[in-house]
Length: 129
Image 1 (cartoon, helix red, strand yellow):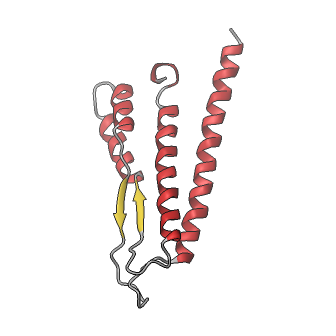
Image 2 (cartoon, rainbow, N blue to C red):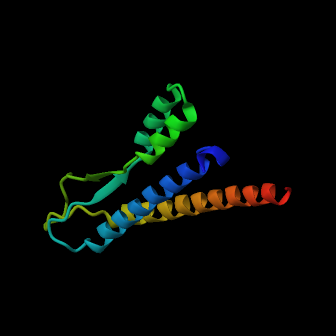
Image 3 (cartoon, one colour):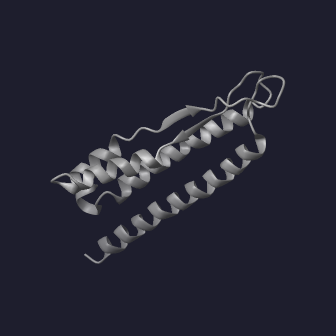
C-alpha cells in the first residue's frame, strides 16, 4: 500500500496495534489491583516512532525508509517500580488506570476514524475511473 497511498495507512495500522497493546496492559493492571506485590506496567511507543521517522527522513529514499521505520517499531513495556502506599506492595493507582483507559479508547477511536476516512477517499477516487 506504500506506493498507492504513502505510509499513512501503515502508520495508522501500527499505531492501532500499539494502542491495542496499551489497552491490554491497562486492563491487566486493573485486573491485578488486588494482587499483593503487583507492580503496574505501561507501554510507550510515540517517542520511538517519532525518532524512527525523523531518522528515516534523513535517508535517501524517504518513503521506503519511513515504511521500514514504521514496520520495525515495537512498543516498549515498562514496569513502575515506585513504592506503594499500600501494605501489600501493590502500586496500581485505579484512578490513573481508569483515566489511561478512557484516553486510550479515545485515541483508538480517533485512529479507526482516520483509517476509515482514508479508505473512503480511496474508494471515492477509484469510483471516478
